[in-house]
Length: 593
Image 1: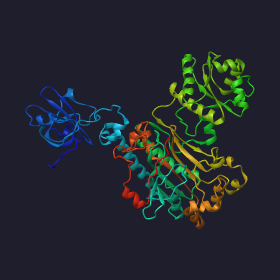
Image 2: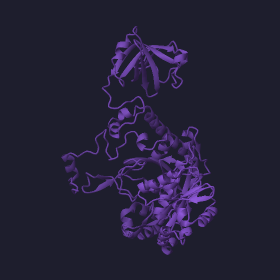
Image 3: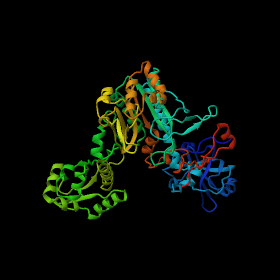
Image 4: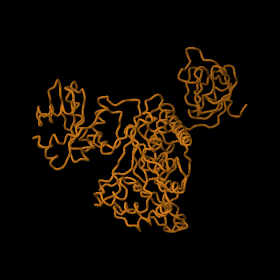
């Protein structure tokens, strides 16, 4: 028999009754029933119940062990009585009568419990992540992540993509976030950067003639932490294709994304490939107040700015007169709700930093609420008729400049959908957001800047760059959104050197700047570059959605905390003076205060 185990802890079934077996694993739980000790023994594969009584030489050994100690059990497989069968455990029809036990490793008193799913402080969970990872849900989430990545690779290879590995030590990137810099020992005073994304390399692969590239790519950005983005590093499904239009990218990737979600959705509904809605950015901002709409929510935001242009309602009239907007969020079938629901929505808006959220109620055709009082019964009735609202529907009103009104209306739409239980459950609803602006106004630096990826192709090409208002130019750029999360971003790329220079010139850079910063791509485009495009999908967010968690910490092996610290390994840490001398570096204390 094997020195440690003949079976894993999840393998034995009723058909194995009578066998002599050996199992090894962690002591998960212990239950003393007056001279009979029950131990749940756990390994990566599952759990088996061990029984030791006063006749078993294993009793004294197991009784003296703390939970999470590691032991080897020799024993006989026995059938459980009908009343003690555990239907929730694959091995629940059997138990092992322990004939002997060997202690492989004793556990000290635990800093956090492994059995159960209790909430525990983040710093403790991350400092003892090796214990945290033993917990059932987190362990299962990590295995789901691994399986999803494996399925992604298979799906990409099946449609003709080849996986390539691009460099980790590279040059600084224009992706928009801070780089992680790596000092060069050989070239004192110079630095590598960890890649924010393999953007330039994957485009160069297309120029080099590799037709379909993909990679489960590690990416590094020195950003502040948040729930849906890990500090430091993350992984994405990175891909690029030659000789394609954006429609072909969408048609290629919809079956992949839908297929991965269908495989792991566990019966939850998934938007079918070929049926992902394609929503222009401007329409998404108008209808949903965001470029990341949750289509499980049926509510549509309506622009009612013109209604209040000369309504007599002073506050809204002033906002509209100053160039602002008014957006309406329907609240269907709210006639039976008390005023408290509407007042709490207003308080919520204020707690989010907004001036407030106006509202109007309607019951049996009669209007109420502050907006109706100021706007008047007849005008409210005309508005309701124009929008197709019902006699028992209420509404919320967001007013401010266009950005403020859209943001508040979008957030209110999500909250109303949740509060009224209108948002579809157990579903993954995908859509493409398309036709993004190519440029945006940088108010801090008082100049035009790229709204997204600077290597995207502007719609209209060079002529648009030379003749149009930069802020009116759209890009062949798109995002894939699911349930209110941006899962992927991509574009058709600009492969013309003159067009590339012109695009950067409108942001204040010169041709020399472009050659200095992006010399590799600029040179490559001089020697025959195919039309190409692609996208990158966030692996971490995909797994987060499938696992139904709200924080990426719950699907990542060894994440940092919210201060971007690795509490387990003690990183970041000071460098040794010897290391700094080799790099010709000196640490400068930051300014106080």
